[in-house]
Length: 491
Image (cartoon, rainbow, N blue to C red; front, side, top):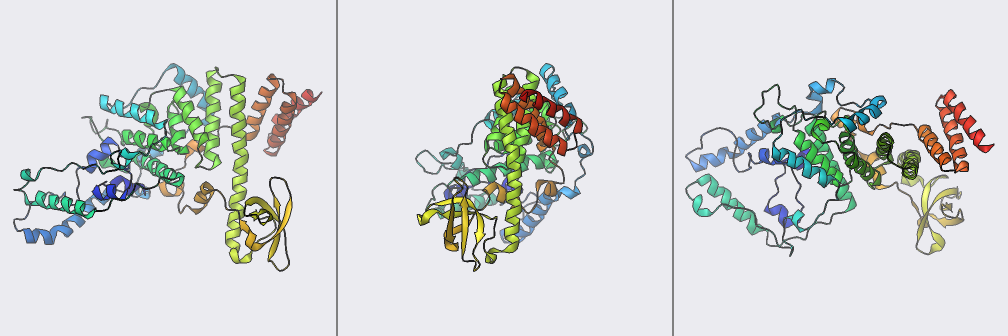
């Protein structure tokens, strides 16, 4: 999908169909403008005979497309020099050290940047912290809803050029086809989520040197030229972040505090250090409604590490972040259970009916309103079930027609139905989404803060839970220390 959007050329037909413009970076637009579907990019002399040229046209286009496809290598064919090293991998144990160093000495850019490059980076980073707006401009229309005309050269300037004249005829013909203009397409939450994924995947592809023909140099030597188009990486990451893509927000948050990110080894040296911006990207990731919990937990851990190293946040703010991160960690367990249960249902098939323990929704008292619950009993004939509702634990016997399976949220289903994960498709592991802390570490930190704010009962419970989890993880000494602290608070 990302490759399609990268090569798609928005036209009058797209405007008339109500398809929003998919933004491309400046370098991508420059490269795309070199090619047209009407003309071959082969360096051959035009045939004097129009009929013969038309016969050869599709053959030339095939050769032209083959040339373009030759630079689009599969991930398995790529052996990037920087993928061998550790530039893309975060050293979690030294993260605090890196953050503190970034507070004193911001990194310098390793490639030459013009003023326009810097302006593009700055505007992209600002855009990344603001929601994408799909107004009339996004659909290339006036506020009234009328289509904006696209720039077309005057006919008198191209009368002597047969090839351009044919291009003009095609443009006029395509306009004449759009007698009825469709309303702009409805932009749903799923649409925004999918667009965010496309932008993020384009950033990944640029970061792994998938498009070497787009790398823009400013007269550097071949050895000094960047390995990939870092400006397009930043552009698409920021667009993805503006659509609440958690992975993009997390990558930008890491780069803004001088940390490595697996998206691109050049990112942290070409994005200015800004701790406030990094924290906003972390909060944006945690607030996303279109993602599973795991990457949100990574954002919460990073946010806590930043404010802890800054040393300026109060206990109340730290408690809020820790509580939200711990709730997300619990959500990971619930999501894993949902995935497991959904897979079991899929393997059984719908014909097998309901089973005890299945999550479902029941038509409460046959009133037409369905409430979530769990199946606690199934009749011998299989035609009715007893459902226990989640809110008040009440039970009700209903026929199967008044009970429906409770499907996992869209983001869970999306994770289950992906044909290929990012790791499988791109051949690399997303180290950005690795959690910096274990759940028992965060519980202990929260217990210490609760103890400082004189919430002894909550602190005791948290120390006990942290000790139990640490013991299960084999951290016996740590578990013993926390158990002793819990006992001292009780006494």
